[in-house]
Every structure is written in C-alpha cells, then in structure tokens.
Length: 256
Ligand SMILES: C[S@@+](CC[C@H](N)C(=O)[O-])C[C@H]1O[C@@H](n2cnc3c(N)ncnc32)[C@H](O)[C@@H]1O
Image (cartoon, rainbow, N blue to C red; front, side, top):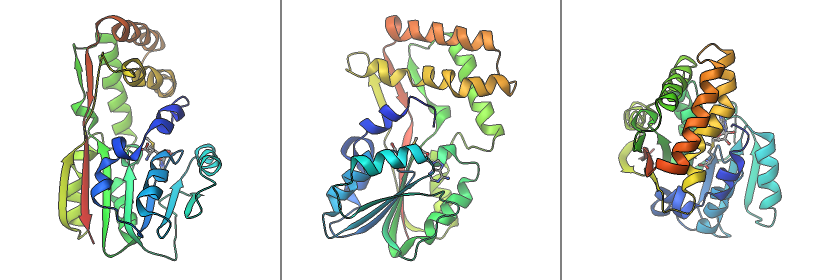
C-alpha cells in the first residue's frame, strides 16, 4: 500500500466501510479477514461475532499487522497474522471468509478466489468487496493532467496483471468456483464537498501520484513533469471546483 494510506485504512469501520458483512456474520462464528490492513474493520467483525466467535486477520504488510496487533491486543479472540493469502494455510475452516479492497491489487484474482474458497466450511460464505476503477465519477471533471495520470495508472495496473474492473467480474468468478446463492450489492463510496472528509477522500489520487506515480515514471508510463503538474492541478480542483467523487464498489457474496 502507498505510504500515507494507513490513516485512511485505520479510519474505516465495519458499519460504514464493510457494511455488507452486517447481514452475513452472526454471533459465535469463525471469520477470516484477508487483507485486513490495520485491523480496524476486523475489530468490528470481532464485535459482531462476540466472545464465542473467533476471528483471524491476515495481511502481507508487517507494519500494518504490527499496528493491528498493538491496537487490538485486548480482544482475546481476535488474531492477526502476517501472511500472503496465496501461501496461507489453516488447519481450521471458517463460517465466513471476507476480503475487502484487496483483489484490486492482485495479479491473479481468479487464483486468489480459488484460495479463499478453500478456507470456507461447507455452506459457509465468501464475501468480497471491491472496485471497478474504470467507473470512477468526478463532478465536475478534474483537470486533464489528472485524467491523463489516471489513464496511465489504469494502464500500468493492467500491464502488471491487475484487473481494473474486478468488482464486475466477481459473480462470474464465484460461479466458476462452484459457489451458490450469489448476491451482489452496490457499495459505491460517494464523497461531496460538504463532507468533513471531502479533501482527504478526494486526495487519494494525490497520494497515488506521490507514491505509485514515482514507480510509474520509473517504468516509463508517465513523465515526471506531467506527474507534478497533475498533483498541482488536482490539488487546486479539490480546493476550488470539486463537488463530488464516486468510487464504484460492489459487494458480492456466495455460499460454498
Ligand atoms: C486497500 S487495503 C484494504 C484493507 C482493509 N481490508 C480495508 O478494506 O480497509 C488492501 C490490503 O491488502 C493487503 N494485501 C495485498 N496483497 C495481499 C496478499 N497477497 N495477501 C494478504 N494481504 C494482501 C495489503 O497489504 C493491504 O493491507
């Protein structure tokens, strides 16, 4: 994850940012949260299952797993583990496997889902929340320099094997892996100027330009001068003209 996104991850709460799980998870269940970040949503899952439940959060970031362990050490049935989902093994199966905003970053999302399915008990549920980055909406349109950067970002991601439209592929992938009772819900994230966090939410693309953008320049996808210009122009858009931004997110659930 780009540096600087930790604050965003840490502010997320189950009831708002992974609310699809509210209708799925029940008291006493065993839940696996894959790509749990700093554990803020995972701790909400712990509240839902109560002390008779059991929750494991895994993530590949040592720094985020350390933070999660520190922040939630007082919850006895909540465990965090440094692990890559492709290599993770577990001697127990889970009632619910959840993964939010993770598959967007993976080069092999089909393989990832095959892996996630392995950890679900018979009749258990898989719930994935993810983006279609091609369906982002800004109002009014941001400066051309930022749109050029965003196009290059999607190309860079696609060339690295990431699926920019993963949200809209999930139900087909679920079917291909034999899951049943598949449901889909719109969980798009909408922010508008009057929101307290409008500047922070919309500035996600500044953080991306400042971090991934450097790599994109190194990889020849964008010119350094244009990257800097996009940051300047978009900062001004956030401050002066920006009215709203919608990130397209879908929650897809299936039963094993
Ligand atoms: C955008 S964050 C989402 C965090 C949290 N689920 C949320 O919705 O706020 C994606 C997380 O997935 C983790 N991640 C990426 N690839 C992973 C993998 N192969 N196995 C486990 N975690 C992974 C990253 O380290 C990061 O913390």
